[in-house]
Length: 111
Image 1 (spheres, rainbow, N blue to C red):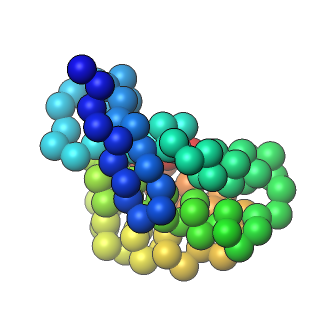
Image 2: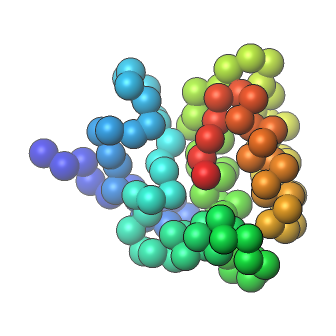
């Protein structure tokens, strides 16, 4: 049986048993490709294509990163609170890029 979709903020995610971990996690993060409205996919695709991000796209990516960081299994000396504050302060495509590199060090690869 397929799990029920979960709404977080404006975004609606369809949980996937195949993502993100090969082991049980109480509340696994949702991946951007499982978001159902299509708005997040458009925002992330703009980011991945290196396009300047509209304010709405930036806001949706930040909302997505927040839920991801709140739920992700972090490794090393990760400070979840500090990472959440940094995610909330992101202002551009380039800052997201740098932040993605930083959080990859803690085993987090949401994009």
